[in-house]
Image (cartoon, rainbow, N blue to C red; front, top):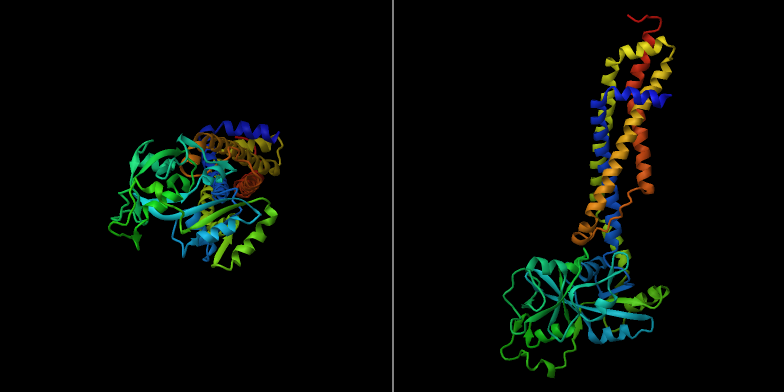
Length: 418
C-alpha cells in the first residue's frame, strides 16, 4: 500500500521528481564509476606485466628496478655482465629468460634490446600474449619491431628505415645513422609501456655501439652494414632480466641465490609485489577520487531532501485528506520515507544502466589506449555496499521532510476539510 500510494503521489509531481532521479542517477554514475575504474585500474596496473616470476637487475631499490625494466622510466645504477646472465639462466629452475638492454632512443621513445623470447613469453593483463598487427619478429641484425603507439604517432609502416639515437633524451645529436634499422613488425595495442617502445635484437644494439666510447663514436672504429656478419655480436652486458620459472615454489629459492650472487651485486624482485608497493604510493590520489564522488553524492541526496521538504507545503491538502480518512501521523512519516527510497532506487537503476552502457562503449578504447582492462559488470561486493550506504543516507536525509509531514499531520487532528 505504501509503495502504490507513494508512486501515485510522485506521478503528480513528475517534473521535480524526474530532475531529482536524474541528479541521483548522475551521482550514482560518478560514485560507482570512480570506484569501478579505481578497482579495475589497480587490477590493470598490477597486470602491466604478467607471467614473469622474477625481474633481475643491478643492486638498487625494488621500485627503481621495476620502473626502468617495465615502465622504461629512469635509468639503472649499473648493468649485468653477460657472464652473470649466463650463470643465472643456467639454473635448473629457470624455464625461460628475457634479456633487456636499455640506453638508446628514437624521437623520445625508448629502445629496448632483447631476443625472440620476449615475443614468445612476455605477457600482460590476464596472461595476454603479444600479437603482431603487421609483420613479425626480428629479421637479421637490423630489424626493429614497433609498439602500436610508436607506429601510430610517428607514422611508420613495414619496410621503413629509422635511425636510433644514443641516450634517452628527446633530442639527441649522437645518432647511429651509419647503421639504420628497418621496420619488420608492428605489435597490436596493449595499453602498456610496450606500445611506446621500439624493440631491436641484442645483436643490433651491440653492432651500433661498436667503436663508441662514453657516448662518442671513435673515427674509423665503427662497423658497416657489409662487415656486420663477420663480427661476434655477443653483448658485454645487459640492463635487466625477466625470468620465468618451472615452478612457483622455486621463486624464493632463485631470488635468494640472485640476491646473494657472488660475482656482482644483483637484485631479484617479484613484479607483483613491487607493483603493489608502487600503487600504495598513489593512495592520496585514490582518496581524492573517492572524496569527489562522495561530495557529488551528498549534494544529490541533500537535493532530494530539499525537494521533499518543499513539497510538504504543497501537499497540505493531501495530508489533511489522509488524516480525515484515518491515516495516523506515522503513516505519513513512512509514506514520505517510501517516496524518497523509490526516487533513490530509480536513480540507482538509471546510474547503473548508464555506467554499464558507457563501459561497453569505451571498454576497447581504454584497453588499447590507456591499459585499463575494464569489466562491463559494475556490480561487485564493494558497489553493493556503497548502494546500501546510499539508501541508508537517503533514509536519514528524508527523515527531515518526513518529520515535517508527521508534525503537520498531528496539527490537523480534529480539523475538518474546508
